[in-house]
Image 1 (tube, rainbow, N blue to C red):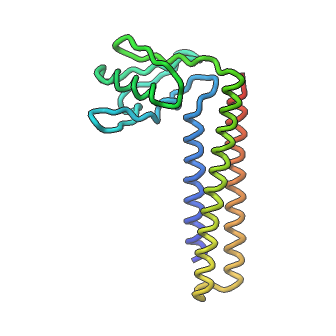
Image 2: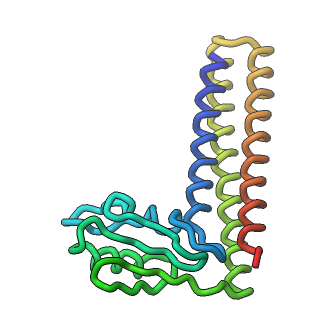
Image 3: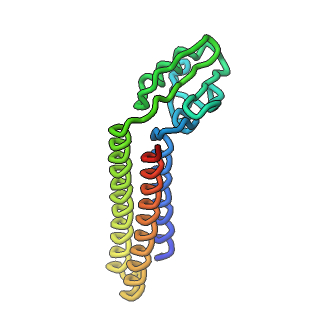
Length: 185
C-alpha cells in the first residue's frame, strides 16, 4: 500500500520536473536552438500541429534558426505561429524557407528571463508540495481505515518527505543551470 502511494507520488513528481524542463527548453537564451520553436503549434488545415511535424528545423549559425517546411504552402501558417508566440522573433521567408534571426539579448531581457525562470521554479515547488500533500492524505486515509499501522504511516510520511526533498533539489538545480545559461553573454 505504502509502496503504491510512494510510486504514484514519485511518478507525478517526475512529470512536474519534466514539465519544468520542457518549459525551460522553450525559453530563449543568447543562442539559437531548435527547441525554441519545436513546441510551437501551427494551424494546419484547422488542426493545431507541432511545428516539428511540418518542417525541418536547423541552426546553421549561432543566432539563426532556419525552418524548411515539408509543404511550402504552410509557410504563412508557420510565420503566423512564430509571430503569435512569446518568442519576440520576426520571421523572414524566401518562399521556400523561413529564417529567424535572434537579436542579442539585452541585460534587461536577461533579468526578465531570470525572473521567469525563478517563477517557473516556484511553480514546480508548489506542484511537488501539492503532490506530497495528496500522498500524505492517502496515507492518513489508510491509517484511519486501519489498513496500515502507525509505524507504517510514519515510515510512509518519511519516504514522501525524502522524495519531496529530492525533487525540489532537482528543480532548484535545473533552475540554477537555466539562470546561468540565460546570464551567459
